[in-house]
Length: 322
Image (cartoon, rainbow, N blue to C red; front, side, top):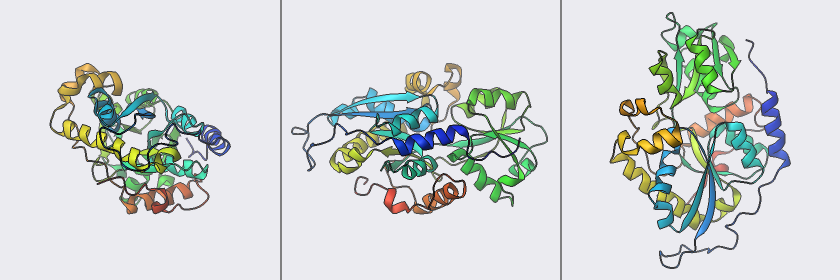
């Protein structure tokens, strides 16, 4: 399939991003100074999550009461597709969301004012079921299923560049639903695909092979982004990240079986796969490296996601991480 330009779905989201402004957050008027545990007022927050490992610390912070210990009443709203999440972002329904740096560029293009609170530990894999494809270099002239103008395709772009290829050397096929993408790959109706976990683990269990995978610690393009109301209230943002860091500590001290409920119910791992899951070494809240943001924002501009190249410093929330 010929490489797609800015698709109808992307155009609809882009229009929505421009047209809708975030609603006033429940954070308005909350304390400007960092409160003590005894004086802090409870704040209601709604975060959008995705069925991916980078959301696990948020679910753990909620289930273990780490948010409540910070006087935060957090609702986690799980989205099955990025388009649904982005519509919620645009209409001001969320105070924060698990998203990615290329999509954040779209938020900025829509003048929504969202900022990066911390990088997250997500990972993408390029998988195939074609015996002749053993490396990324073998993708030349092949069909790769993905969603254009998003971070997984940005990863593909970088992986191709490392072997002297570009997106023009492959045929991008837009397949929005990841389960459909996996089935097409398994049936060899496409040559390769890009998917995140837990879909990567599911596809591997069914016979697909990983030919390249991003490092969830060194390559962090998935993020927790926050709406203007939370971005402006740094004391509350610090409380969110304190709960997040406590969840990270708990995760790193355990193993996948200890968090089976979250892995199966919230993230979507089949129960039979949980014993084989190896959780990444999660990192505490931190700023995304400027070099990663510069590359992502340059890609966003080249793909027509933004009209200008964004400044990493302008979209990063400073003063909230250790």
